[in-house]
Image (cartoon, rainbow, N blue to C red; front, side, top):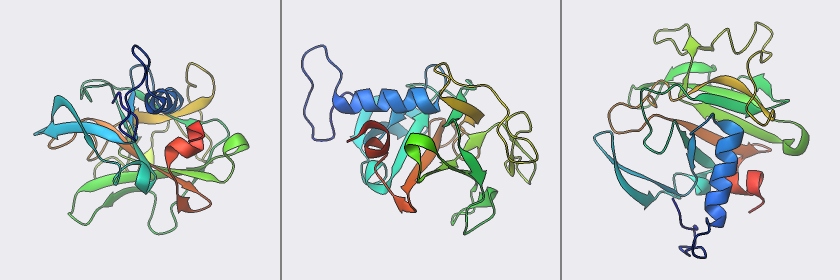
Length: 205
């Protein structure tokens, strides 16, 4: 993931603008070692990282999405914290109950939605594949009690920069690192209800 979306390589020894943005998003939303993809994603076969990347811009930034991995290998055996920026308010998605659900293929997933505030006012974040949950048929109906209380207020640790609060761990229910995927959380970014390039929201692209 060391190339710009335009395919231009950075100056020798320097990370690309896109990589700097990915790193910024990873620091905001993930714990130590977390890795983010907004355009070039890992090439995966049978759950293995082949050490190559492919252009998945249609699935990622062009659709208002980024993937956050436990690390560059999407390791299954690591519980890496997942965060939301401070001041976020928890809410239920309008079209289905929050938490655990079955997608069109019958696969179990979960989704938790937060409205942001402050410099990110008007932004909503949809987290799909969150670990550290409980309840429901597969344990993904609710955020863990150690992360959110009965009033919907976040109660857990902050990230190293004290800019975000933990909601769980990266990769749960279909993002847990089995099958065709490395362990990751799929994150949808909307501005006033419209899917928006996360690089524009968090990095000013």
